[in-house]
Length: 181
Ligand code: IMP
Ligand code: MG
Image (cartoon, rainbow, N blue to C red; front, side):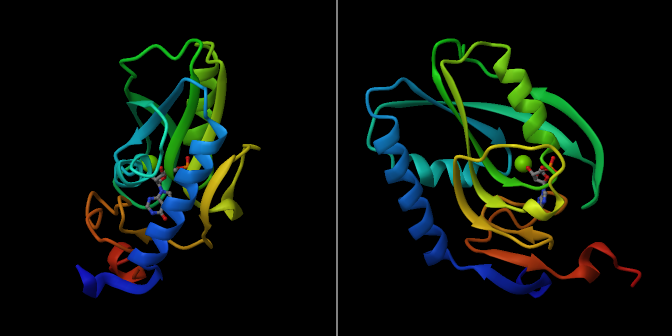
């Protein structure tokens, strides 16, 4: 698994420090609010699990699954709701927690969908922001790191379901997804 990584982009320590910082910002901003963290499966679960342990106010969590990527690292440009929330978001302060925002199609679909359910507020927290490829204009309220246009894995992020368990974030070697080159 480690042989497939070209270089480490963010170490375990750097990630933990950033996640703690985001958790304390969120704790301050959502004091006295009814915070529901909506997590996007599966990539976002590792980030969510660490993030909520740095949030010092009462919260609820819920999950959605959306698929915009096929089996390869290239998008098909289609977004599909694979699993819906169990909780109602109406009158809640909703914070969407994402692992990475790339082109933004997934998130833009999700935000439009959540907006129709009348949350009191709707904001976005992402660990990674790959903004070079962004298509729709999306406001990101909490952001961990900017990433260049490279394919990253680890800390929840996968390539064909692999590498999610790496404790750091690294760039995947190109030959892993373009074996013929
Ligand atoms: P978007 O609709 O292009 O923003 O797609 C975002 C989704 O694509 C993320 O939630 C990831 O599942 C996946 N994705 C985008 N870039 C990467 C990457 O560099 N590594 C792993 N997954 C990625
Ligand atoms: Mg994802």
